[in-house]
Length: 229
Image 1 (tube, one colour):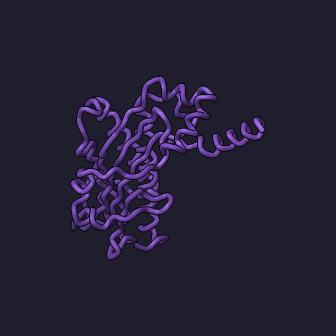
Image 2: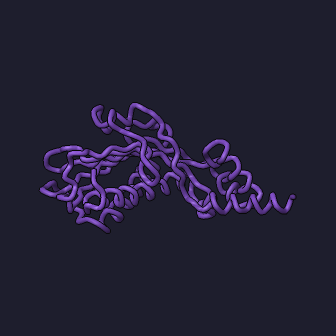
Image 3: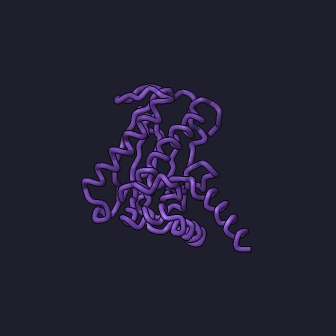
């Protein structure tokens, strides 16, 4: 019986412990509607698997006309400034901006001026939570602790000592200002062994890299015509 339980535990660990980040429910906060605007905020619905936690796509938008993007990285918006030191805010903002540029550049021409066929991509960091230094690494590196952490994540929805972040994105026509789509998502640190040697904001960084890839992929699905609004 002990052997069977051990095997089962290892299977659980393998299945759940490979992700660097995990999606969790968006935290309701004034900053969400403050950034997206009340009209858009009212139309947000829960996303499906692989989509933002809350999202909206303008059903009237002619998405296939857009071939270029202009990135507007807002940085921290409406967050408690005492939670993240200014130098770390800047580091996280720079990480997010770099990841977003890299991902969008794979599919679009990135420009710095509005014009016909240009989507303005505005992104704001609404919240960031640091991992507990040292304990996050130990909980992932020591097999017994990692197993306990995986079990705890099932009960609480989050790995112990992990950090995370919440962000929002708004896509609009760069000339007219018409909002084309919007989304809000929250992610926390996952169980990947890659998280062992991270700095305290590593989980937040991983979330931002995941969002950059998701924004580029989902946006391209609409602008390429593969998916309809």
